[in-house]
Length: 360
Image 1 (tube, rainbow, N blue to C red):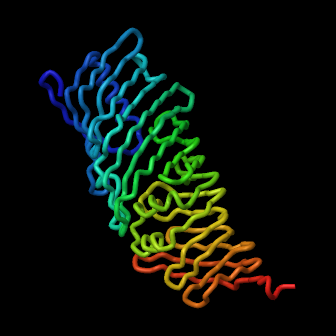
Image 2 (tube, one colour; image 1 turned 120 degrees about the horizontal axis):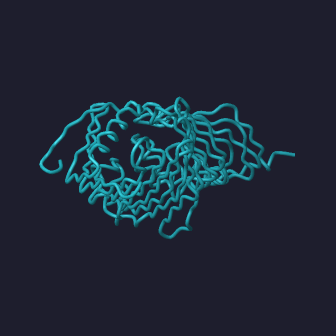
Image 3 (spheres, rainbow, N blue to C red; image 1 turned 135 degrees about the vertical axis):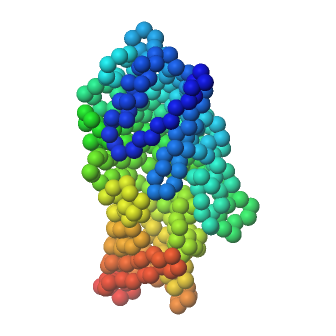
């Protein structure tokens, strides 16, 4: 709405640049524009994502067009501030933008939902820079800061805050007529997680994909224990959630690779995962033993997978069967698992064990 005028438009989000060109042409025919308020509704899969735009000002200055305004997606307590510039007239062959989300409390039910982990609050802030030139890859860099307090089932008082910080940069190459990038990549260097009473953990991530290509996430290393709370909040499987609470896993994943065939909801639920396990340990759970010093290769797809053990000087304890831990010299073989909403199924192939009491 501006100067008492209102307008309404609908356009499919099919990756075509035609809708964007129509909006650009309309704005260039109105060289000075002030929009007090606008509402953008994206409807997909029966769900509506609403974004409010406030105080949008559009005006030419010299050989550039300047845009300022505030953008407020659903769930934010205060809007993000947007600034953008590009050349006047003709096609947009240069473009730059800056978006800043002030640190604020985000509505928990919009971001975090879990029966076992109740989010009491989530404070989030972000800064984003975007630049593009004709025949050059679009570049993006930014920073995200998040503080969250969660209450895992059975804990009292609530656990203190985890602080998450990530600095990222990336680039994308677009075709001449599409808003969907032909290929893109994003590097997070590093992602820092601060947990009370624990050493900071850092992970370097590399995410890449493109039109018609699978999405691939690479990580140099991931410390398991600090991320257990986040896994508790994200999982929708009660049996897995209870197992994480009971076993309190720790150790490290190295050379992590996660691949999604595409970004559909079904593909996102069934990633392919591979990683090297180092120094894994856990408490006993049900009939499963407690362990220390476990190593091997992790291979998974969705809710099922296996671990190819290759452990030396490990400790394994079946508290329901033996009074003390078993300390084999070597353990090798495959362990299988499958998660269902109600239970975890475990199994194994032949296991080769060398016991120092009996080996030559």
